[in-house]
Image 1 (cartoon, rainbow over the protein chains, first blue to last red):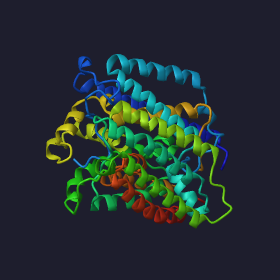
Image 2 (cartoon, rainbow over the protein chains, first blue to last red):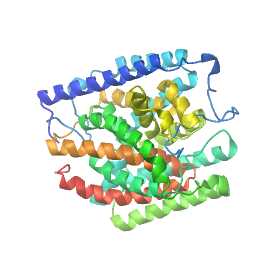
Image 3 (cartoon, rainbow over the protein chains, first blue to last red):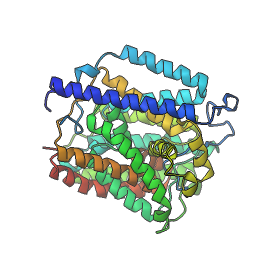
Image 4 (cartoon, rainbow over the protein chains, first blue to last red):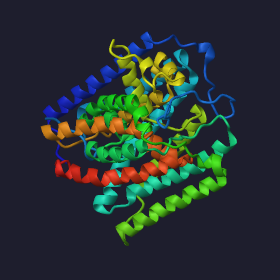
Length: 63
Length: 376
């Protein structure tokens, strides 16, 4: 494992900053352009025992 | 060229290690914002994700690394940790699924898509040095290749979703859930027997006098199993990673004039269409993915990740592998988390098929990894 040089560390830091800025920018853009969140229709805090099935997407879904 | 994948070691980029306290404040702030403006459930799931990310990064719990160490070095410690994780998660999940009708298993269809997808995923995850969760936590820790791979993974997953109907047309059967078919007790017994069989195979491969247990893998296994169970109880569905990635890319594609979700067999389905119109902060896998990134970042604030410099060919190879990984994870109905961990622990037969094919792909991927000089 090579020790990080100052130049590599700086590039790493810049890349990480770009990543986080883009990610946060995406979430903010998405929040502003998506349908408003209806706070009165909150999902139950705990699905188990709530009587409401999950409506979330999952990787295992085929359609 | 800067750095990237391979092993993550403790001493790392000092610039990224600015202390955990400010990050803890930011995470607490995000939790409060989510609780106030999205939902309390999503805020709690974000914290579950933070825990998952901290466990993955803090214990260096890499599914990809564990498999590679077993194959290349005959070191079974990582795989032992994964088997323990699967056993504990199944012991929690299967009785819960039988008891609470609201909870859903991770049921994917046995299909040609699954066979091809799992094989390609197992191969590409070795080259990219990270599966779905591995890419997330290493990106959170600031490993350059994984930072660059994550968006490609997302677009690959989105592309896979666009082609999924054609892959399914090649042959697919209905998902098989062992808890539904046999009940929780027999399903758990079958699952544990399968895990013991895998451990016996590993024992045969590595031979005698090997160290099987390592503290960090065991702590990771127990912590991840508990958090995956919390995810199931709170969200009503098992932990997943890939769906969130595909959704993010679909959101971006939808904002362009070139793609209409109504023309996609996958995204025009009512549930997916609804999620496309909502904020990603309401999506379960998205919120835990964001939490994993934050949790890994929190860990890296003290224990940064170091990595070797990569050449241009290695960068290109790694990025292509990331794209393939995203595409294949959609065909395979999940990655090591969504298909293997969540599939097997909730009794889905597709999880077992996934493991066999992905391991076959890993055998090729390890050779390709060597060929491109990632291990030298």
